[in-house]
Image 1 (tube, rainbow, N blue to C red):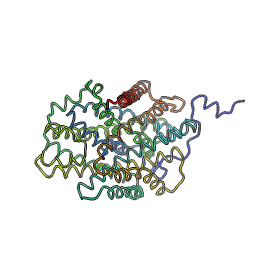
Image 2 (tube, rainbow, N blue to C red):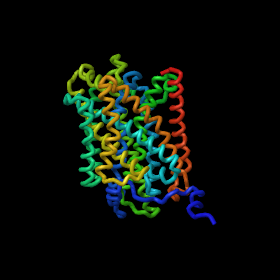
Image 3 (tube, rainbow, N blue to C red):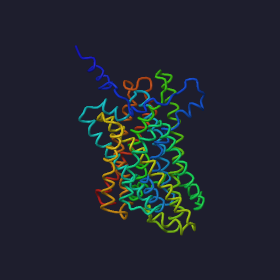
Image 4 (cartoon, rainbow, N blue to C red):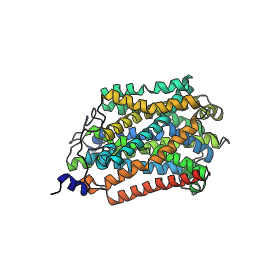
Length: 450
């Protein structure tokens, strides 16, 4: 007689039962009142989406957007819009997976796949977080250098203090973490609003820039930057992060409660990512209106952009605002990347260490490459490394996206909250687009076109 567990596995169920939840210190720590009205429930669920939206504004995204705007004007705004649509759909799948199964994406991979498959996925997830942290740590160090003259190597070490920030904020409650990130996003928004007003862009060019252009596929350098923008926006670590932090809400575990939680979690991430699109597009618009128009078409270095803003815009306030926004982006991004690293480490290999030690280990694993890069290359090569890190993220995206689409499409795994066929179909198209663009870029690199 066959074992019951074997029968379940043949039917497509999980290989293992769900065990310790993700981020156990803050798991279901935010109460959801079943009698609250729509607006109050929306505010209760608001927060995780903004932590995810930080990925739109990390320093790696600055490098790709600055390069894209200075070289091609407003043409790559369509890629920013496409990336936003992809992000909204994929993050909704993350919320669906977490709410339906009680697992984050890392736990789901461990519980669904055999060891020979789940361990390589863990290694790739860690590499993605290292690439993410490389961009964020270097970006923060550059901001500290631009604003306060702190050497890059020392700035990289200072960024490690975000572990202490997370520990202190989480000790006061997860709402403090969300409030901290949202406050930083508010500062970034004000900084860019003022800079865009100073730059006075061609708004007709901005609007037409959101229309797709075939030049992206025929121009290898444009494709390279487009992939970088996609990698900087739809980031692998965000998929793990969102599927973990959405479980901080103590929603009812009935079908009705889960459906309601999914609706509000999706609304939260959609609003937050739409807001982030405005900020993300602002970086590219600022580069196009300031550098491309003036003939500075080779600005892919954050330091050079900071240096040129003052003479081009005619005010010393512009580079200061630029540096402040960059610092806020770097701080917020390193906080969320560290949390994502914890989720990945706990989910894939079930690390049973004290919370402070887990975070410190996650941070050390990610910060060592950043220190090595800054020491060996210095500031001169940081722009190329920032863009390359985002392209690396784009290559690693399929290894997170494909399992996510597979899990959420499975009726056996998701039960009543299985993704509808239209949503699965759109998600498959997104995965195929990412894979096809990666194959095209690999071919161009292999034949020496880039």
